[in-house]
Length: 414
Image (cartoon, helix red, strand yellow):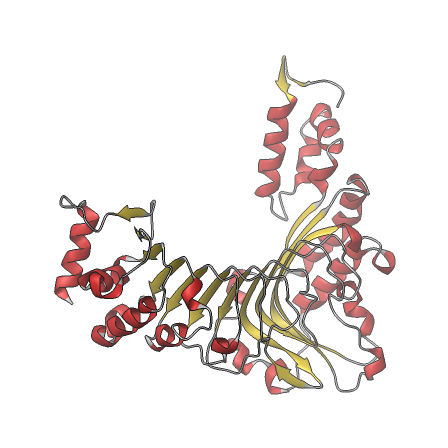
């Protein structure tokens, strides 16, 4: 648009305001009320929307209905033409939330058990849409900047069907964010020389989340700065293997561990923040060198996790520790054992400067804080709230705020 204002009825609307309306509509669009609706309001709106290429470069698609897929098959080529060739593409394809796998479903997944996999419409719909978004021979994959695939079902590729997953095998040089809930494998009938590597070249990748991931190989993570690994594995020689080897530049690593085998390298040279969740560790994390580690976050459901975290090779270097107890442990576990485990962890943190914890954990710590906390520098104690802003606590305050009183009450009740 050449003008700074758009004529609306008898008045003019600032173009900047109209763009905010467009962006809001894009954020909340649905399959039946897409941003194409903006083209129908009036000629001025149509011209303004058509003249904003970035408006047509974001795709939030919920698969699961054949009619919806047909709408997107028709819609995507038109949107791609309206977006300039240099505009980055943001792709988000998900199954309906109630169809996504729960935390434990991957154990019984056909991908894991080797059982036959039923051909699923969600996957076929998704692959059809990705084929359009990838362009001929992957020509559009160079524009992909963000890709989220959260799919409920599993897919098995048979011999002769390799082209189905070609969109995921092209280089994606501009991709910065990758989030996968994805379960896919080649059938044994597919020769090895016909199997392509998925997500092979991701030189711009900054953040990757593997939520539930069962694939032939891990994506290229050699450039990733932030990695979240929840549940899943990749096949190596047909054998399921869980691990994070090729990630030399990771700075923030989040791992959910459930007791199954997990493989890590000898050193993470740039890791600054480690986030651990799950019922236990027990996968050799204490053997990994993390010379730049500054912050540890632990959300635990068993106190043994705290004891294992205390054995981390570079735990003495950390400046900040954040402890959160899962709701169940607050009701069922032995507070005495838990308190000892917390003390063992804090006792090895020689350079601790900030301690952050939820109300329950903080109540255990402050019962005997002089025994636990012997920092060499001034220590910040922060109460992490579920809602509202976190509150810093002065452990020497003679007139403590209400939050402090509540903590003391909890401590006295334990």
